[in-house]
Length: 223
Image 1 (cartoon, rainbow, N blue to C red):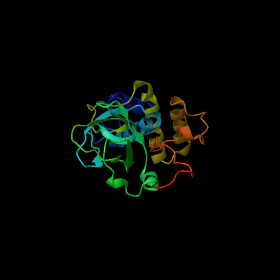
Image 2 (cartoon, rainbow, N blue to C red):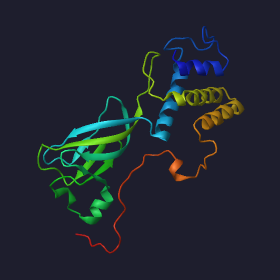
Image 3 (cartoon, rainbow, N blue to C red):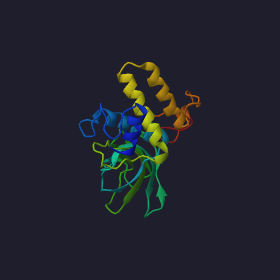
Image 4 (cartoon, one colour):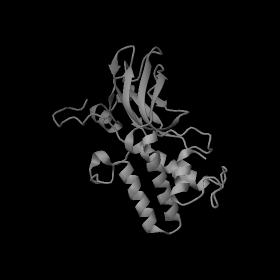
């Protein structure tokens, strides 16, 4: 078992050397690992702590690109940059593109904007006209779930106890002990520095975010 799993067993009163309920095997630790993985995913989403770089060789006359990664799942793009042109792409969306130009799919040239489509797809406007451009993306990601005690845990050490309390909260909730579950969940919030945060504050809510430019004002004329 890894260090976070040991923290969890200690908090629920298990012997970490020879546990009674959770055997130190991949099968025996499934429930604990599922909860720890849940915690890691939420912490990554809340803190933007797991980042990735993605290089896309652009293709002639291709507007849409699928994003695949062996390091985890894409959450959102923070920066799109064309190194050869020293150009940063703005984020937009399909609604805005269609508002400005209903024939935007026919526009060609050097890309100026990108727009996410779901989680694993993105589009470019206008579409490139050659194969010589490389796009560099900086992304926030959610790490893959680990399944063994030898797997790398992609979580900062500062958050290890927070993840442990999150998992212990789920453990007590699964056994119907709402009081203990709430206590450990509050400890998780405290370790994350979220306990005193005003929960309705939009900058503190976890969500798939975007950085797209605002819609044009009413004075602009559609083409």
